[in-house]
Length: 287
Ligand SMILES: C[S@@+](CC[C@H](N)C(=O)[O-])C[C@H]1O[C@@H](n2cnc3c(N)ncnc32)[C@H](O)[C@@H]1O
Image 1: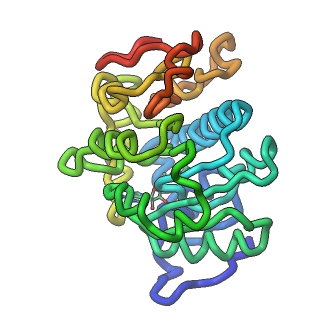
Image 2: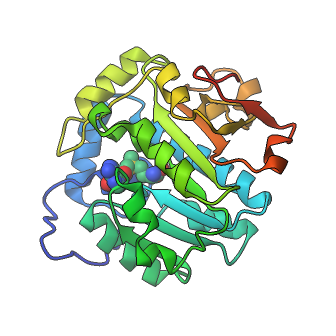
């Protein structure tokens, strides 16, 4: 493992959620404390690494899908570390100059992520500290505006993160703010823990995630669908992430992960509304 730096105030003896996630993804950017924590969590919630990899694979397929439609700007909210086929790596396979802003509220993630980007081709890819519970602040941050043309369509990502937002912080309102503020033609890639897909796994996961300051809030399908109210969801709709535009639909014995995911037009243009690939979003999204 090559760990680039410790930002002031970072305790390398304490596990960090983003580095634990990197370990679960099979990455190289983690420390002994993170590996110990990940192994502990895996005992409490077997299949945790499958969920992390399922989310990362979904992110990859969704970013590729939208990049192939011409999207070149991405705003990754709750990005974690930019490792292991992160947004910029995937988008740049289609558009070598795709621009990406990674937003995270964890200062460690920001400093570590910046160091990682400096080592690689980081031009047009930045880490910005911000709290996704305040999308207006993020969309008016000069560091974001320096990289993204916000008057043009942008793909916002809320992948494996909105379930860390409590009901008190109104996750549906966060999506609504993005919808109201982003340019017409902008899209959302969403994945969210759903306790209806696998209640047992999620209850164990919930127990596991009560470490540090991280508590998970899995939600029922109807609540996740309601977050997309007013958007136009792309086919195949709001589905289990491992089946979203993947071959898993026809495979047998594929492990299921308790997350739902969708790609949606946040503020559809008339042309997008006319597209045959879209399905209407209602409080109970259709597949
Ligand atoms: C499970 S990781 C997901 C990372 C990434 N979205 C992905 O798909 O790989 C969750 C990340 O969200 C960040 N996060 C959690 N709550 C946040 C908030 N309110 N604002 C910004 N980032 C947040 C955490 O610091 C962590 O890095």
